[in-house]
Length: 68
Image 1 (tube, rainbow, N blue to C red):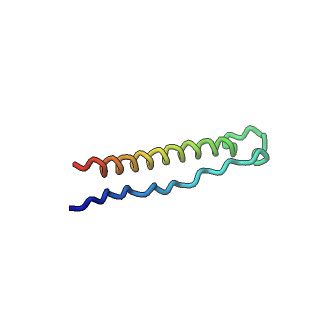
Image 2 (tube, rainbow, N blue to C red):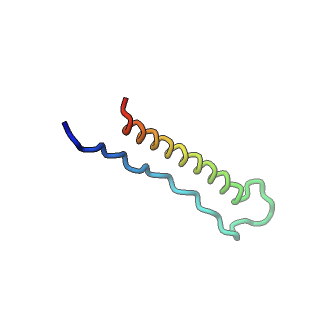
Image 3 (cartoon, one colour):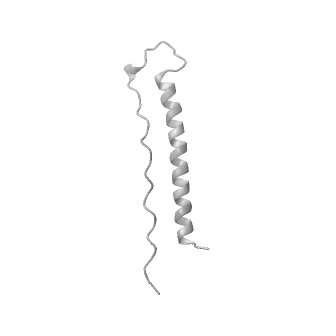
């Protein structure tokens, strides 16, 4: 019988965060697809993906600590 504790899974790799546009990247023309609108859309998608990755990681940790 081993007294070694299980090694937790490593922290998951996260995708890179979208890069925020510079102020002068916007033409100021009120475009429907303004670089800032697209950035916010991409940032929200990134946040959702990161949240899901972290949720899955937490589930793996919990399963490892409480085996069935």
